[in-house]
Length: 120
Image 1 (spheres, rainbow, N blue to C red):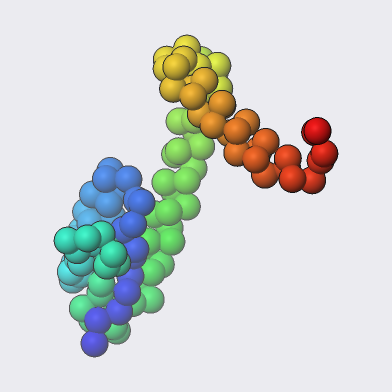
Image 2: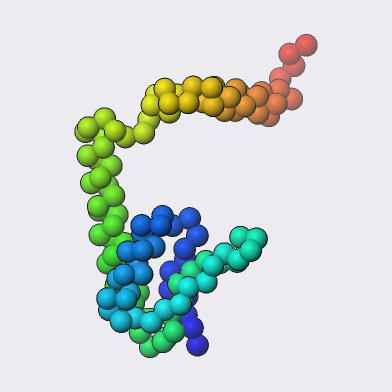
């Protein structure tokens, strides 16, 4: 019987490709399910041979620790070089969209708390 190995929902494409390559390099036979026509199914990698689950899980756990380290280092480098996304860079890139969402947030906040105060 197949066993769920790795969920793919909201996983970056480069990470999915790296996981596929890792499993293929270790001859771990998996198959992939998509999120279906309406996006309600679970996209995932499933292990054919349950007997290799512990081996596959250990490989994926090690991979995820290494990937997290690489992503933290890349983010730290982006911060040092000024390439990291910030509130100010978002405003500079799309000022109207930024102001729209700030206004929308303020409107929702006003509607949420206005019933608790008497402004009349």
